[in-house]
Image (cartoon, rainbow over all chains, first blue to last red):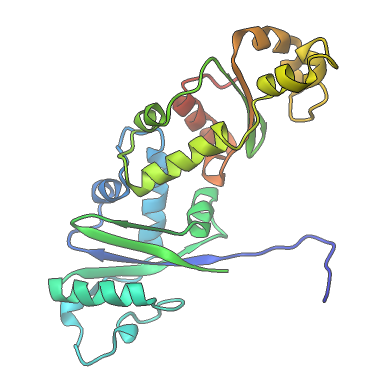
Length: 137
Length: 124
């Protein structure tokens, strides 16, 4: 075992997946998160929305995916493992013809993004499903 | 009243403790959502996991330190700027809490947000 006495740095990223039946506007995102635009926390959720949009690859329309391709290969460049929960949600989303946004949050950015990157969360309503459970240190 | 003591910590003076429901309403979040979970975690950070220095003093330290300011002086977390007023604050406020805030509430903007949630002012 080695013991380091100096400064130790660590960074992490959280992969996220958003299944969407509508555009991922700020208004829709606030609805999903359960926060009012007049909330004292609105600025924090605005920042999270921007981080998700900035950190996302181009959205994939699941209607364009060939059904013979395994689910785990649907999202090109997805960082980390596509969990069984994600597979289940993706299969259901394909049946509904939804779009997928995916990407990652980074701990080397703002304090707000770092917080959400280190948290592990999931949210769902009738239009969206957000999975940010896959935290990879 | 809120006195930031570090980028991620503050000394908070409050006359009373809000209920969880009041705190959620002030935060403008809906029950059973991720935002509500975040706000309730913050509530617990402040009112469950942090020590109320006033209560600690009255329960355990009043005999050793005749004045609250003498007790408060032993904490490096109490800013020097508060010390001249702290015995008066002790009479005015029921809760004197040293809070470590989550990183999304760090810096000045975070302290202002905390002030809005706790319905109290940020000291200049």
